[in-house]
Length: 319
Image (cartoon, helix red, strand yellow):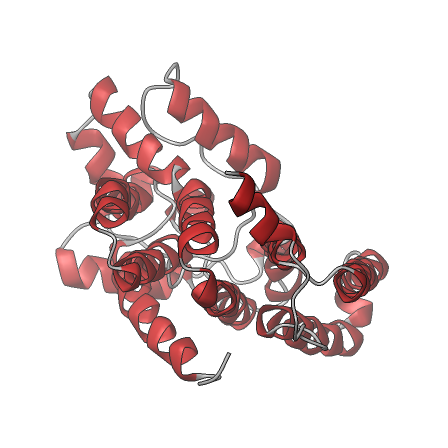
């Protein structure tokens, strides 16, 4: 134990001089969205706070880089990665601030869903399986999203350190690529669109174009399931704290969790892989059950997750 602690605080012989790849991807996203803010400045609700928020991210990144340069050790590498991962949820509402200026596209995706399945699975799934135990399993799966990220990141840091920076790069890069998609593709998902249209209309197969409705409305339907359940309350509290009518297609929950499973497989540790697998399956299914996503969102999340994993494994080749 003592030897392991010394390894984490041991000064590196050839410390990295600049930003790590997972920090560069943050700076790239920051720069791209900053340009969007300037171009749409007069139409945005809080452009000043968005700009100052980005300046704070730059300051945090620069400060951690400076500390690392003074004390270049593994523990500081972890601190730099944790800081950027912790900010991922802070970046999320930004996608709504930017994409609400565009016309909503939920009617297109709801129509595709109807054509593919002859119904709206997100509407019927919870009605067919209302049992308390099943509802709690679904909410457990959905709530396991960020813990899965934490487990994979910490496992790689502790037992596969040479792969840690690449792992952080893949996770961060995938998140921000999803965020870019959400900025330009305004789809809110059933929990917002069904409520805006009305469940009776949805059940009839009527999917009207709501245009810019979500530019001024952010009301979300209460999640289906057992409202007294522990995991139900966890999911609802998380939604109430930071959910916005955005980020439905493709499902980043499915996409990122798929990437985490591929990263776990890359470690060749069977305990990690088998331990994560049931939570992964529950998470993928739960996105439709709690009406956060259409089935087409989940399918696209699976496909994009695999694609993003291999994309970021290739770029850069040396890390």
